[in-house]
Amino acid sequence: MSAPLIVALVATAVATSFLSGIFGMAGGMVLMGVLLALLSVPEAMALHAVAQMASNGWRGLLWIGHVRWRPVGAYVSGCAVALAILSLIQFVPSKPLALLMLGVSPFLVRLLPQSFRPDPLRFVHCSAYGAACMSLMLMAGVAGPLLDTLFLGGDLDRKSIVATKAVCQIFAHLAKLIYFGGLIAQGAGIDPWLAGMVVAASMVGTVAAKPVLERLTDVQYRRWATWIVMTIAAVYLAQGGWLIAFPSR
Image 1 (cartoon, one colour):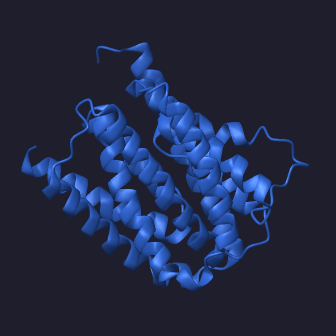
Image 2 (cartoon, rainbow, N blue to C red):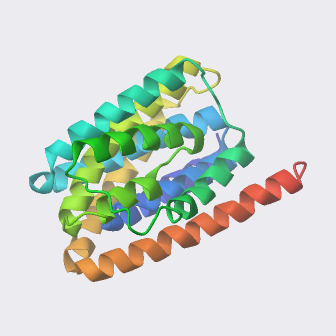
Image 3 (spheres, rainbow, N blue to C red):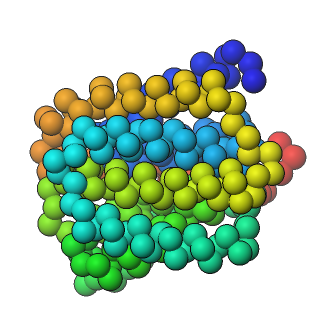
């Protein structure tokens, strides 16, 4: 891998972890799209998992006092069920399909009935979302928009949302790393030096985001989070559609 490409990946890791550090979302979507453009699908999925584990792990540690552990346990149980089932299939999406799944997921969750309001403190809701998010993560690389509907639907404050989601995502991305880096293992090897630099970059971005989140109000947090995710999703829908329409370009 060339030096300019490595620099670009590290810079992207800093920027996207900064974005996720503020909103607990969106950064992973951006990073996944960049990695899909530069690497094979298994390599992109595996490196994305490493970066997101570092980013979410550091974010969870910074806000450890705000983590709600009951939702974490329920979410992880759902993830485990989905991982076990999908491991039997060992499905690897194409790049266009992964991009389309990235883009369409935020719009799909908008189709949920307005009367449906998930509660992150209810075990059934969290475990069901865990299974659905794990399935989406193995197809698109990220499941943030779907997970957001769970936590934004409850009454948790912004710090509890960011902290609890971070811990949930640590386990989910670990499962993704096992799936693509271990179960499939078809060209998904990761350069240890590159992985180390991406991990360090993710921590830098996460730390830099902490004071920004402190200054946001809960109203500002929810408004900006929704706008950012939907904008990114529209870009990926267009990109995936372009690759399907013009596969040789």
